[in-house]
Image (cartoon, rainbow, N blue to C red; front, side, top):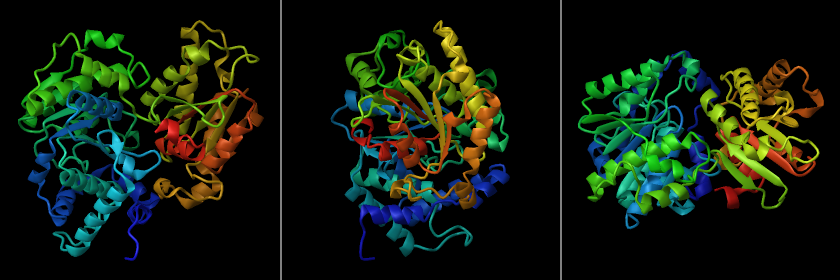
Length: 500
């Protein structure tokens, strides 16, 4: 191989993506195909030269949940770095917004392109050199997420991190991150039923999956949950022999802190992060836990300075100062509810006179297979609730001056930025804009009086950004429904310098 650049690594990685047909098969199986994930992942790990027990050296905080798990990881990462600035802290999350290397961070910063390429090809080569498999039907190389997870393990072990925060990709029990035999502490953020609703799972089934990260002799934490979910989490913690089961308590002083992440729901995520960090720092850093009713200055600064791009994030366009982007990759009913509660706040809800307020544009897309109509209906309903809560008589059906439904294809040419390449949508659906037309029809059904000429169905993110550029200024733009969409907007609109 003549070239082994970061771009080459991304190209190789994209070749491991599951295509739309494969994802359809997983959905049709009801998730049964996931049960092979752990033994296969352990075999891949062995093939690149590690045993499962080696991963204990990463000193892991493992976090799952339906919503809030990424934010919890971001808060936890910030706390560890502020309390122990001399430590090297690794953070593994998914998905990325603009560059795949964002998934693997050291002390808050993505590893460099050079480092990512180095670790990537070391894993790639080891798999090429060790092709023997217990089951010949197991692919020679793992799919995209599993491969990146292997790269993260290899990078963190090679860099000798003092702490690692692992965010579960999907589920918990069968997730590729769930091969660490003995993490230091585990946590479950808020549960909900819609994230994997395509599999027809109930809340107790989802709780069973999430609690699969609980381990023998390891503290098992959770935020307050619905009764049926909490019952299963508690039972699973006992079944999996966790050292203790803890429902984290609110910290009174936390309510007075201006968190670095926006949204009322972030207080619950911050509470879980504080508890995870307290236990970890006591066990791994010899740091006496702070009082439960207050927080010391390093914790406060950490929570204030925490950043998690693309989640309830407000960005002033650096090249178009009268354009403000509201970026939130919310892609479940519950997270979209939080998104609208955040967006339709004092900044937007209290400025109702059309002549004096900014134009409001919604750019939206959602993954095929999810019920876009239910998402849009819930969003419109929440807009009405929020306007009423702020004492405004504005018509919720006319809150947005324009709505744009576009694909996640990055550029108007029909091509993707390498890191944003996606193969998980059927090509004929992309060409026909199937999902986008379904969203358009749903919007018209929900709001039959909404002017048709204010609804755009567009083939790329670049088309959507160009449509915003042509809007009368000032303009507030809400981008929601997909983290891939948010990443594409950051790339095309040139927001990386202020958003990432």
